[in-house]
Amino acid sequence: MKPGNTPLEELRRLAPPGTRLFAKLEWFNPTGSIKDRPAWYMFRNAVEDGKLRPGQPIIEATSGNTGIGLARLAIIHGHPMVICLPRSATEERKQLLRAYGAELIEVEGGPNDAIAHARELVDAGEGHMLYQYGNRWNVYAHFFGTSQEILTGWPLTEPPTHLFAAYGTGGTLTGNSRALVRVWPHLRIHSVEPYVDDPIGGMRSQDDPFQPPVADLSLVTDRHEVGVATATAMVAETMKTEGLFVGTSSGAILHAAVDTLSREGGTAVALLPDAGWKYLSGPPWS
Image 1 (cartoon, rainbow, N blue to C red):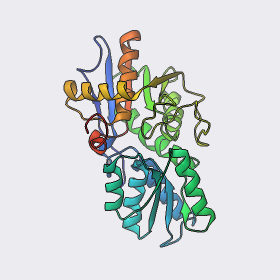
Image 2: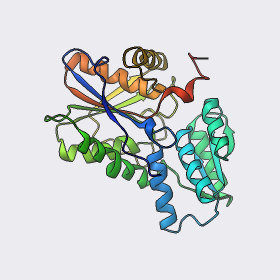
Image 3: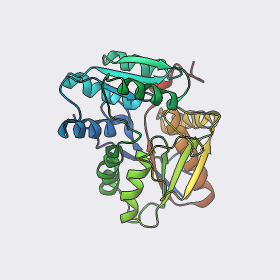
């Protein structure tokens, strides 16, 4: 099953008066997140190019969602899966990875520490790393996939004025912005990020010492830093107003979108990476 064709839904109750807000609901992908898209593109390309041999172990550093998408593909196609992820990842994500048969290596620290450990395994000949942070197919998944669905599914005559997306590996922002500004040249691209000292799973700050090689933020026009408490409050507000249980990163994105629309007006598209089910063991739900 190829990922994609996720709904683009208008959030009429959450949008400030006089504005319109549309959300791309990415938890309708096979394992419940936007990361199914790059996982599928990276895996397919590695097989077609002969970089990934039959039965060869796959190694990946992830905060959870990309690993879950890859673990699904690995179990279907007969590849052992080794996941390096921060110990702080929620139990739901770890449980899903184990359910898909992945071997988990929990690393102290954050995503950069997981990347370093995965590289050590690859250098020791333990398997092939698709390396989402430097794999061009991470970007192409959105250039050829997500963005085209937005263009073909856009319901209004006038184009949107704003696009909001999380900055994580850079694939979502880079791929979508490159494709969409070709058609909508006046579209403002908003990067939504956590504070460096207040991390949100799956997201990265431009102030982080490590910046993913695939990230090209030259088209980003606006940058929003959102804390965990603010993101979580928007998760609750979205559930109360729209009946949608979004993940923490989606809460951060929606906060930035609603705040911007309330001040500036316009029409926005928000790319929501996943739902809230994988975060129930973390604060504040725990």
